[in-house]
Length: 331
Image (cartoon, rainbow, N blue to C red; front, side, top):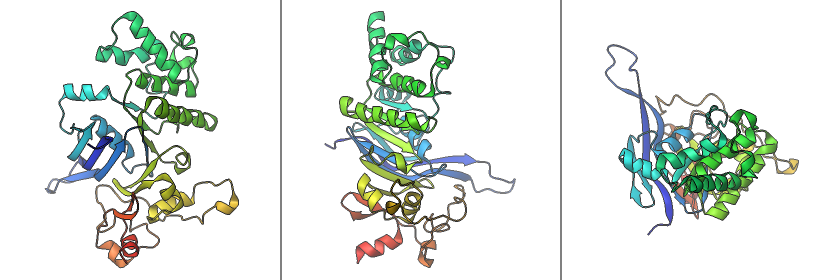
């Protein structure tokens, strides 16, 4: 049996859009996720990185069942949940929780912190008694770094800082004792001084609770010491995936190289030559023929406009989707 707790197989999510004219019969779709496959192991951190609009957040929403997959398969703990019923999805969500990007918007301003963290217990009917409910809430708050928890139970969200609010969001996820956290840009709204604290908290939870984390970010600079593996997404598809050190130190896809080239390096000798991509990301309604990155790729060849590359092995557990890489590793 596989040791993966969450798996996506050839996952696609298309959003229909207006046809654009009375006589246009061909339906149009936004290709938000386009043939994405990966596994998330137990107590593993997989970082999904890429520019805004590449499909990272839609991937998380689809995995959680908040968006229904157009095709492909989603498996949780060995069970196919792609077409699960509402009852089955509610059961799955006890074990797969999401941390949203904006703690200012994801907390109800009229509820106390104690009520917010207890709400998942009420929804799933997990608390045996009022005392058990309060004990679980206190444990979740303290595991999220809000100590002593009694000082926060009766406070309202507007009385807390941004970092404290995000800890409340994390506590609301932890109170169900999940197996998986889907963390969608959990530090992007926070001050730089607070980001490291939240990242350290997530790393500690992975160690102490054995939680698997799908960590979504656009910032490659935050994942170097935190993630076990990195998956790089571009225009709805994973174009490179591998162990963190392999991807950071030996990137194979031109898009990954471009992303890494603009990450600030404290040591000037370690800085890469900057690769500034030209143009905008192509329209996800009209995916370019051939390699979808070729309109912006600084090393594209004529064949890149004709053949769509697939992920190929470029090392142990390291894959990249590039025709130029295929030629190097096949020779």
